[in-house]
Length: 158
Length: 59
Image (cartoon, rainbow over all chains, first blue to last red; front, side, top):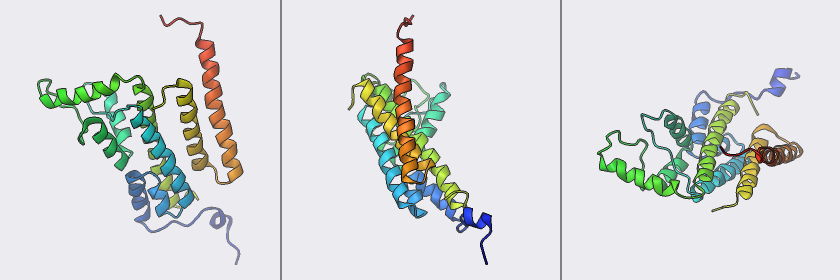
């Protein structure tokens, strides 16, 4: 019996848990979701491209964003950084010497001053803007990879 | 660390072009076409825009 057009063009969906596993793995390490779904060449390319973008961001003195309540855009920037999964942890450690996501609200808090000092050291670098652009772009790339892995796992895309 | 603005732009364009080529295309030919068109247009349009903006003062 011949296949219908829909069967020919739309791959069958995997198990119910596969989309969530693929999305989680894609978030954890860029390309890992595609590797899990059997797209090994794409997985390798995505890992190298997103990894290189992230590495250039860090090497150019880009900084992982911290949430500061008075600056709403820092929520978006931090969300974008967090989308890099394990890479974000590395980025935060290299930027601040610890894994931190928010700037303490109390201006007298010595922890706030320490974090700001570490941030300012990068902001003063002439390549800080380049680095931040690379870091934010790497995060946006990985958000697209998570969505792409979801589409592949649900059979919407090959 | 790359300090040249032009080199940063070229590297950035190349990475973004390769990313979208593999995200949206399947064949090698189609991917190469996207890399050349997207990467090339990012660099060329940026240079054109920079040239157009050149006569305008910062303030």
